[in-house]
Amino acid sequence: MSQVEVTRQELERRTIRRSDFVSCNQAFIDCRTPGSDRKENYSMIGPGVTQSPNQVVNLREAHGYNIGAAAMPHGVVNNLHLHFTAEVFICFRGEFLLRWGADGQEGELVLREGDIASIPTWIFRGFTNIGPDDGWLFTALGHDDTGGIIWGPNVLREAEGHGLFLTEDNRLVDTVAGDDKPEDVELKRPMSPEDIAGLSSFPVEKMRKRVATADDLEWSARALLGSALPGGAGELAQVIGFGMTEDRLQEPRIYNPHGHNISWLRAAPGEGMLTHRHAGTQILMVKDGEWEVTLNREEEVSVRLGPWDMLSVPAGAWRRVRNVSDSTASMLVINSGDGRVRLEWDDEVVKAAADAGVGVDHNGYLAPFHLIPRPVGK
Image 1 (tube, rainbow, N blue to C red):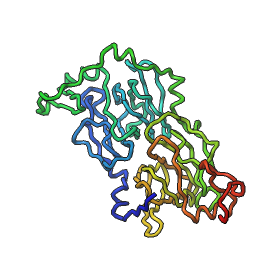
Image 2 (image 1 turned 45 degrees about the vertical axis):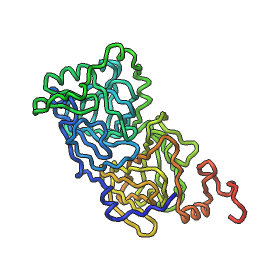
Image 3 (image 1 turned 90 degrees about the horizontal axis):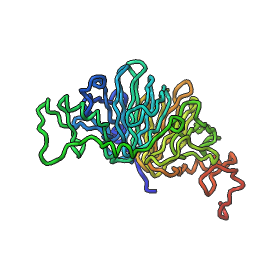
Image 4 (image 1 turned 135 degrees about the horizontal axis):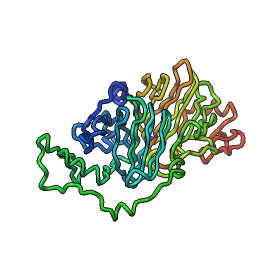
């Protein structure tokens, strides 16, 4: 893996504060539909599936996935649509009623603060804020090019009555604002009943297995090589994919490929993850507390992140993470790729762990150091 040094300027560019989020209330074709006209859409990492050229994107650099958010007052609806790539809802505040199926009647589940839900591709889904006005859902979308979305037939028909149309290349046309219907590109037509009938069905019991609540999480206190060392006692819970756990017994809640993997990291004050790196992109998104992230091994640069702040860590950069709060804190760690994330630990961490009797075996999992075969002289 090539050496990556991150400058202070680059660190600041990759730090997205909660105060940096910029909403767009005309991101989608239902932006004038009564009951859906007070939605606010955000795009932090990549443009996601926004249909507005005016959407502010905090960091456009390709990560292998997109991260955005939806904020909406109580009672406001996000209408039925389907995705071609993974859509993961991460509830950071409030309560949201998820519904799915061609008519939204196939099933319902409620998401509460801290819950994460992965909605299968190629099924219609929507949601309503049934909690307080400041409800907030982050979204993680699979891959850089999501392909956009397909709206439910009634959504497109109702939007036409408000002067809104969607082109086949996913551009929003607002005739009320003076846009002309394009002559060189066809407009989206409602999905046919035959195509809708061919979509998959998901009963509630099956969908529930794609939701990770606090009670569903499997935490491991030995998920990382540095877990037995001072400052390295962070715990992991795998939500989507096996991710970066080094505990061979730990399994994720959700297995299927998403183009990214998602883990919860929690740590007591002063603890976290010791110096390591890996070859993929990574987003650190703080849920609560205050965290310090330090990049590089020689010319170190550091940043402190508070609730809802996020940092994009470049592939191959050395990093360590520490909870600098006065109580246990948590953050989400999102890494690119569908396979396991193999960590490379700093030599000092490897040596200290060996002295503590722990090593990483040839399969990338923690094991008693004295049982791991080593080259002569090592």
